[in-house]
Length: 146
Image (tube, rainbow, N blue to C red):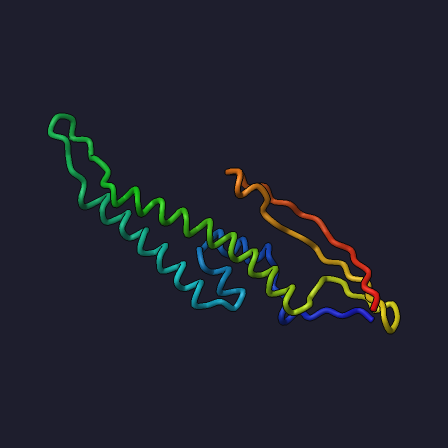
């Protein structure tokens, strides 16, 4: 018997791309609205700080009239980048964890009373500790006998 629950399933790829375009949106998609709104708020505040201190608080050098960037701008850019990357990674791993906790897989076939054949697609980001990000896609096929 083929079983699939579309209502509770979370797509890790969809969560990743939602967070890629708007930080925190992948968390909202996963049902973690508080975490998503916190990430979005931090990113919006950082963007506001970048725009405020870039366009209104530049100190001008009297010799060549070149604006000097304030350290608050660098801190805000770093914060925005960190929250954006964290949001993408967290949304992907949270979607996979939600699916795992709900026992959802793409294919679950009951062979007999005591045996199940399960197929689960796998997506993860590899190499994070080495300073690189490599998306890895694959699948897991398992036979569970009780």
